[in-house]
Length: 140
Image (tube, rainbow, N blue to C red; front, top):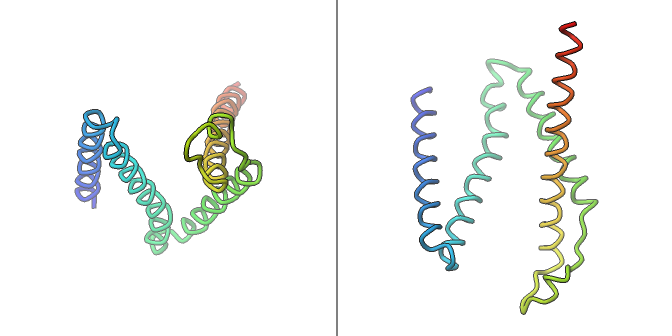
């Protein structure tokens, strides 16, 4: 299994390097942007697939992993739900000036992604600060 994981990692890195190099040569064209977006969608889908499948595959070895996986998925769903609720579908000044402005659902999805990123960043910083503080208090 370790060899398969290493092989998949090297294949993923190689394809990513090829896509990035292609993007630098053809980035100003729609082909370059489209290629890197398609690869980003593929990586996102693979990440979500791994998030769902790995706990299910490990249920025989560790039944508690399924519960932890379900908690993680529920956390992500709640986080994106909060981000969706606080996001707006309003057009900005920049998008209003476009010849073909994005739709309101595209604006809502973009805002949701941005707010989810901000929330995850705040949680990561909070975890770092809490972990450091907890370790310092525990070691006294």
